[in-house]
Image (cartoon, rainbow, N blue to C red):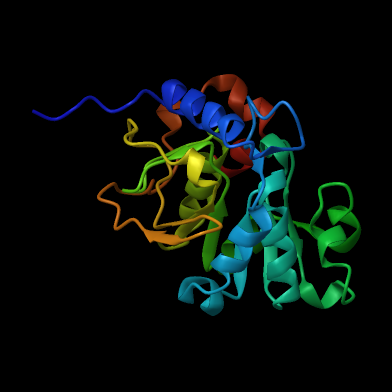
Length: 237
């Protein structure tokens, strides 16, 4: 008999507890309720650099959270265009052209505090006309077969679904996490973003995930207030 997958909230609790037990939790605190930053985030970014899907990518969409700051900075240093969603999808997507970032300022340009000085907001039409080659998503808890739990508000799922609604083909998805964030099982729903690769400071896991990625937005499951809170969704609809 198969076991019952962990509920997402249980998986998140285990991941947060694991980070504390490993003394790996890192500023900003508390890590609970957010995509947690962790000791080794820079090493995980460097390991990501070795992945062929990263090396081939010209444009990468990366979440704006702290543990993926090293990924955003590295991508700019490697000459890749970085697309960042606004936090909580309350505004437009931001595009940072590496040519607009002076050498040595990549980390500053990739930070939430300064990214608008280096990048520019792009319209959905521009996002549709461009090509995103790789998605790097932050995670709270993940499984080795590619299931993922974020902080529980569904933004990463929606961001990927927006790209699909705009006509992008299925895009490889990678996460960078601490090993303590890997759990044994996790319930997966149809709208959930799933992972092709999990990168830790120590290893790269190719998940060969059996779960499908979202093919678009499930409008029927969106609360009406989501459209007013996230104007990008109202524009897309």
